[in-house]
Amino acid sequence: MVTVARLLNLTLVIPELDKKSFWADPSNFEDIFNVKHFIDSLRDEVRIIRRLPKKFGRRYGYQILEMPPVSWSSEKYYLEQILPLYAKYKVIHFNRTDTRFANNGISLELQRLRCRVNFQALKFTPAIEALGQKLVHILQQNGTYIALHLRYEMDMLAFSGCTHGCTEEEAEELKRLRYAFPWWKEKEIISEVKRAEGLCPLTPEEMTLILKALGFDRDTQIYIASGEIFGSERRLAALRTAFPKIVKKEMLLDPEDLKQFQNHSSQMAALDFIVSVASNIFVPTYDGNMARVVEGHRRYLGFKKTVQLDRKKLVELLDLHQNGTLSWDEFSGAVRLAHEKRMGQPSRRKVLTDKPKEEDYFYANPQECLCDGTSCDDLLGPGNLNTTR
Image 1 (cartoon, helix red, strand yellow):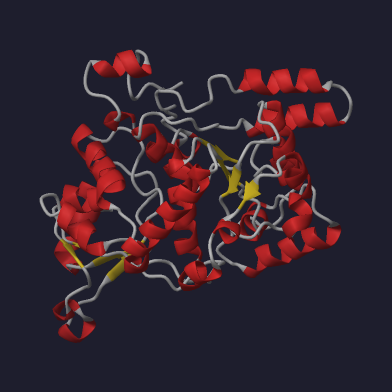
Image 2 (cartoon, rainbow, N blue to C red):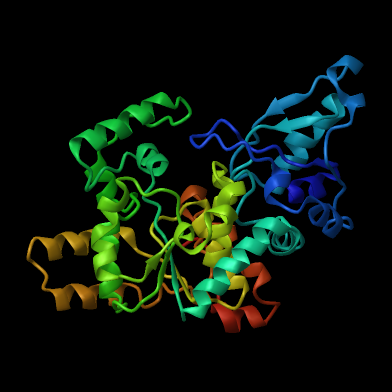
């Protein structure tokens, strides 16, 4: 949205955050991010104000246009479809802002501005930053650590319809929840079909086998970067048995430290974000927004190791191993082979011109910001940024 404001030469009002989602987090933008730094660091790019001036209110005759921009839109869309609306309404309120700007086909100047916002302008509040760094320090005192983004949480399972490993009662509970939220549009979902397509978060039990297959042993320190795991400790039992050095922020910090962040899921996620970016290895079990943005930050910091799990392949291998078709050695070898080139190495984004939802996300691999000119071919390999493959 900063980049859109810059493109259209319009003033940006500090965003309002959604408070109606599953977690009903009351946090405002300024509760999570350092607003002064955000405004000051972008001063030469775009004018940003904290709130809409009263003179643009309805009592002064202004009618605010509320609308969602079209997803994956180009510069042309904003210049030709959105900018003319400004002349009529003066104030436009975008009520949806996720994935509203294309991954590719955007000018280099604007792509690099997106990076400047993401990597430099957006800083957490001093309180979040301090506690996040305290967590990192505690973990590093005990050696290297993996951040496991275990996205096996109630909202994700209800939304996705993924119930593999759940009891019948749990599956029914998740289905009821899915129907309770009208903006989750997909209602009737066949869990095993989605799982076979690689569209489900991997379960704690599946991750136990995958981490062992990738060569991690009992002495591996694993930080669970997530909210409450669905099924709680019962579902973490196999993982804890295989990897006794599993920790969560609630285990490492004094309850008093976390008190101010309780019931604020976005602020708690910000702590996990800091720990995940700093980890020696990052392992996301599902490629949601946080996982992809952490991956991009780790690339920006020097291509730190991120295991990009091929869920579709892994589900196939897991089932073959668990039905006795593949021995442990065969399973382990196949898992490692499938991920040799999925460790966060330099690479070009996959571009699918007609299927932007399925192509690589800009923020997961902001290649335009990771190299300069001719050095890109050396780092990423030859190829055009917009080649479909």
